[in-house]
Amino acid sequence: MVESIPVITIDGPSGAGKGTVAQNLADQLGFHLLDSGAVYRAAALHALNCQANIDDEPSVMAALESMKASFQPHPDGVKVDLNGRDVTQQLRLETTASAASKVAVMPAVRASLLDEQRSFRTSPGLVADGRDMGTVVFPDATLKVFLSASVEVRALRRAKQLKDKGIETTMPNLLQEIGARDERDSSREHSPLVAAHDALIIDSSDLSIRAVVGRIVAALPMLTAVE
Ligand code: C5P
Image (cartoon, rainbow, N blue to C red; front, top):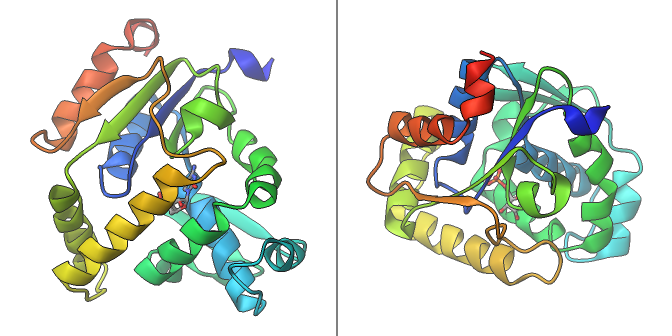
């Protein structure tokens, strides 16, 4: 039964370190990884490629009918093919993230992406990162984590990440984009970014990735015992 397959959910705002923490944890436990942000980014990119109006739900939904995406594990995260084209790099652009946060407010879009996300729950287990993994997609998760950090720390981390990928940006732009995205993600009506009532809350502003992973593993006595 799929419900018996363990899931660890890591939700939080962009730049809190969810992706790196999730990848480390998945590697350590030998679990699969779901980067749900990549699913929303792919949907937004496909809508843009189809010339859909990114602010209009019916227009985006019509475009999504022709979306064929595959998400493959990759040492740097996830490799994404969209209708036969490798869009891994394009997916990481802040402009794609911003479009993703626009389509992510649409309930029909969120509902249409649920099955895709839940299909990642396969044996021996899953680490899922996003905004509503513990609240909506996997409400029965084994452990729910809410990872946050100050907006300045998150912008600095995102700048470094983008630089490592050869993508140039400026701090004022990044602070503005992250602030706008936080606001959209937290204030939307459907599946807003909130900590699940039963989540373990970690502020990663002054913690290394290793320290965060350590705290999560420490909260998982049963799973670490079967490692
Ligand atoms: O996590 P990432 O920055 O890749 O996500 C891009 C955008 O996709 C987020 O700003 C958010 O609007 C949306 N998203 C979401 N629910 C998720 C994952 C991402 O709404 N579970």
